[in-house]
Length: 271
View 1 (cartoon, rainbow, N blue to C red):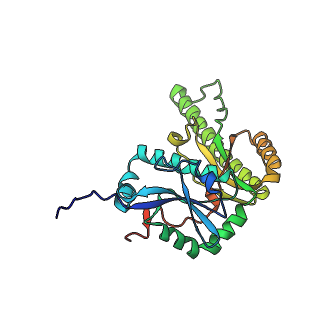
View 2: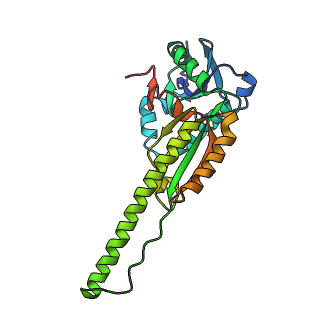
View 3: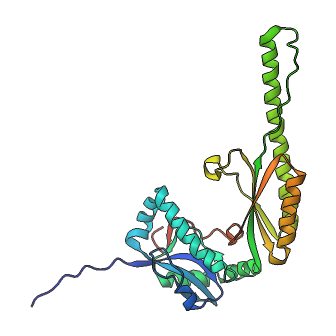
C-alpha cells in the first residue's frame, strides 16, 4: 500500500478590520483585504466583523511581532487596513479595529462579538451620522524684535549678548503664545463637536511640516454641524495668527472607540 505526503496549507486566521451592524456580502466582495483577496463578514450577536484571510505562518503572534518592527511592512499593512476601514465608513457606521488584531479562527471572531456586543453597539450608536475630523496647528514664527542701533555701554560683545537674549526671549514668548492659542482652539472646537481628543503633537519627520506642531486634535462631528465646524476652524485661524490650522478628514472614528483587543497580539492565541 503506497502513501503520499501532502504539504498542509498554513492555518488561516482572521485579520479584523472593523465591526458594523450589517453589510451586503456583495459589497464586501469588492473590497480588497490584506492578502489581496476580498474581505468577508463573520456574523454574531447582531453584528458583523469584517475580516481578511490571515495565514498564521505570516500573521501568527511571533511572525506578526517581527513584522511590526519592519517599518516598510508596517506602512503597507496600515494602508491596506485603513483602506478597508475607510471603504466601510463610506457606507455607514463602523467600529475600526486596532492595527494588527488577528484572531486564530472565525469562532474566536464570533466569540469576541458576543463578549463585546453591548460595547460595540453603544459605539456604533455614538458614531452613526458622525465622522472624525482632525485639526492640526503649526507654529508660525513671530517677528523677532530688533535690537537698538546703539551698542550701549560694554561695547560690541555686550550688544551681541543683548540681541541674542532678546531673540531667545521673543522665541520663547512666541512658543508660549502658540501653546495658549492651541489650547483656546481645542476648547472652542470641542464645544461644537460631540467629543474631542487631543493627541500628542507629531514629530516634524512624521508631519512633514517645516515648523513645530502645537495642536493635534481629533473631533467627532455631527454631519449637519460640519459647515459650522469648518467655518469655526477658519475663524479660529484668523483669530490666532500665531498658529497655522490644517483641517483633515473625514476619517473613520479611530479616536473615539475603545482600544481593545491589544495590538500585536493574536486573539485566541497564546498569551
